Image 1: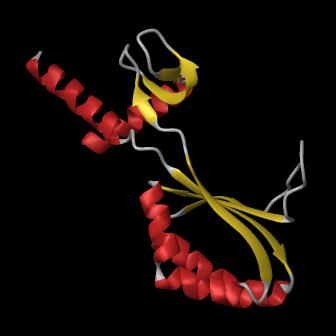
Image 2: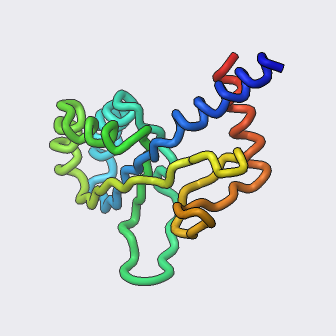
Length: 160
């Protein structure tokens, strides 16, 4: 029984450790010279991003504009552990060197945004923080069961 309680407490600590919101680097890119972009810029920027802990979520692909101005022809989304990690990329020499090369081959609109953090709800289930108020103050939205199970499996694997 004590072991179960300790295990549960460790799982909650792991979930709370994951509560810091991720950050996303979003770039809208209009390529002027595809050959130079592919050969000179992409290897440099990819190395800078992955070296800073970035995980490519969207890399090119079809875009659809629903409202407002259409996005640039190429859209990139990169996930980082936090805004601090994303800022570290922007401050790094590899990133600055890559952008200096990339500016010759493309125009870019690049910005960062803080994501939604995963928290533990009052009933002990993982939840995403949102703008929906809940009883007792604060904000949370239940996470679908399939995601809860995957997160539980992830948290348990980290404990092993």
